[in-house]
Image 1 (cartoon, rainbow, N blue to C red):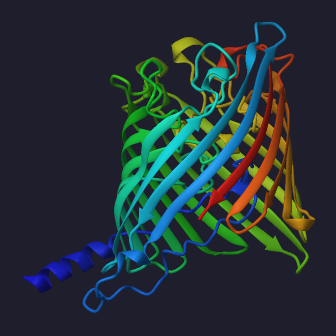
Image 2: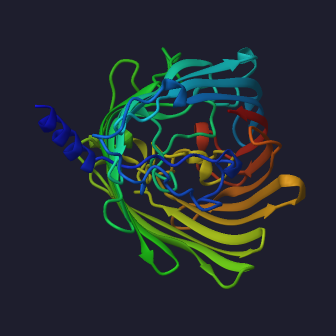
Image 3: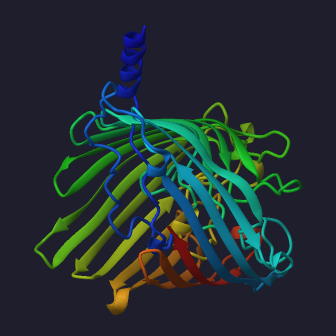
Length: 456
């Protein structure tokens, strides 16, 4: 009987999958794509564990999780043809405490608790709705992660509440820039059993959103979900990687669960990204991507049938520690008004990474969105890193200009455990007649952040 059980576990392990990619705080959660190459998945490609030979593992060989992040944020929002919103200023402290067990016969577990302390909650608007300019870091006490996993045979399997970041997080991400994570109650299996290839499948039954658990009147706490995420990468191509993805989103609504039918739909896409190295000093990073989005059985009936296109192209030049680049991102829209209106939707994305740090376009207008951008990254002396970007926004047919944005940021890693950053964003929406974030017309957004992060 013991042998049969062992064989069953080994068979299940073959179907299991790889670890998640960590989010680098020095990436600022800011760029339209990865500013730097994603870390190699270290949980995969390791020698398979011997189920029969491995002995007990002391718990003190596990990993203690401890992170403190203090942030000051100022946000103002004005409008030239409509009332603006009073400015908000927030001081918040986010604490995460957890523990990851050592592996025993390939099995392991992780539990993590998250607390966000709003030091001056009365001075800012922490949830979407009328009032002051929104700073989406509400107070929160929440179980952030709790899952059991199995790692072996170049694969990894996880079940429970977990962080999931897929590709560049344009469609699925943990929104790590905000103090409260977006996490997923899900089963995930990923594998690298095929040389140079990576495959991941996720079934998700609940999305725990960044607005936390104290949202009795705003229905922003979570999505009820019956969604599927499928991703595939292949690395043995000239200069980089090709990938494909399919996301079937079925995001429903019940009491205190966010209304999601208007965000449901099916998306499929392809990308090719890489870095062409000219010599030791010069290289050309690039990304080309296409996706389309259609209605599915979970889509709001008022939106009818639709086919919306997505394009993203980015080309840069890197010389030693500096990178300059240009990019173009297009999100389609059906052009309809009212309940029938639909813009290309990415409700589970790490949205702060895309279309500017001012977060003027957290939802795509029904006329679509085009983002023409220039970016620059520079590794400065004394461990500082500078990132800047300029954006020019229009609708998808370039019939209307939505506005312009300027973003600058400076970060420094003081020690292995302590880091800091300063960021500034200004969005100028004057001249636009199309409502953007929070429903106002001709919005101007100004945002400033100062942040310090300590982690073990």
